[in-house]
Length: 480
Image (cartoon, rainbow, N blue to C red; front, side, top):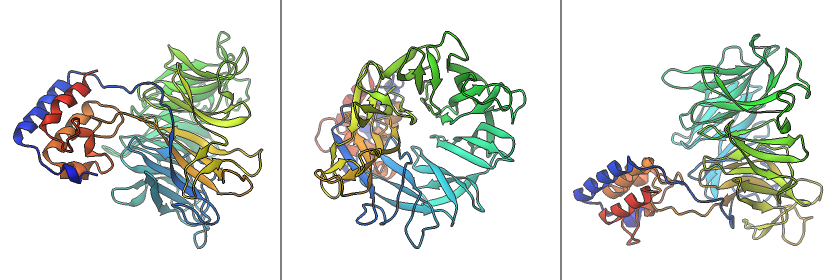
């Protein structure tokens, strides 16, 4: 990937690169364009009883939601492993069409909620074992350790999300008491912060139940909360969606009609998604009828899709996903066929649909099931900053849905301009200045620091070299 760029750049190019860095400090990040058109799909793994791809035969990921990083790394947990490991659960890690099982839990341990950050770390919850808690696999060392059991007294740590500061946000269960949203940080000293709790845990809390949390790089947790006295958790109770900081302060994003009679929302789905700048993607039932997907910062609410007015009909009860571009991914039917969508409030595009033909290790494969009533997609979806969408789908030969080819984890690849994106974050920002200078000075060091990011992204004039001739082009790429 980097070999043809092995010519080092002279000191004058270094000076030019540093000048580029100074200029870059004065400009804003360059955002991507509109919602991508998806035409390229890459198979990561395929599960089946025999002839599996990048998995042992008889290993299955069932209905979990696979994860994808900005660099295209992929992770998911395996709920079933074949003999002699049938008592174990596993963690799969890879990307770009390759990968393998990197960790197997202890016999009879329950593993769920695998989450992936941009540091090539995977986190998950482990219970029913002698080493319960939140675990982390670090790809750089290829080791997995139990990261934390905090807070003291916790018996369950569900729905973890691992951010790029290696912090985790999750929902804690205190047996016989209640639930709370916590975040954990490993530095400077390991500690956990309470964001919100139900009134079984915190008597003064106005919330009788806290639902599935979402977590971001600002150490904020967002989610749906039910208001009411202890034990009053029925659907007639008021619901709110809020963002909570690590000091327990919060911002109201949305509320249902039981909480505010003027609200257009009659109910919210249980899971949300959260951007780094404080926007929450959620799915709601409308008082006026129908269901919709929304993105809101509490002041401005954007409708991404509505069952009555968009091509996405019958929005399914799976969590949406969102990136910092404001692109929201979700599952919904198109007519009678299941599909996955991405929208930004202006454009709504279908990513993939039931009966579409995708590439596979067995040749062209159709998204299908042998029983027409069975869902062709399993679990939810994830989206990275590039707009790549990861999903899992049932597969069959194009002309015979009675032959099962198992289930495949796919990445729908978003086309993008990569010049200037030297950290493969899918945007050209100040963070690219250092890697750009390194690519000019020492391509070998750049390759070691960014093994999954092509140095060709620094070659603006397409002369197969990253050198001083590319500096002016890089500066231009930084200026909106």
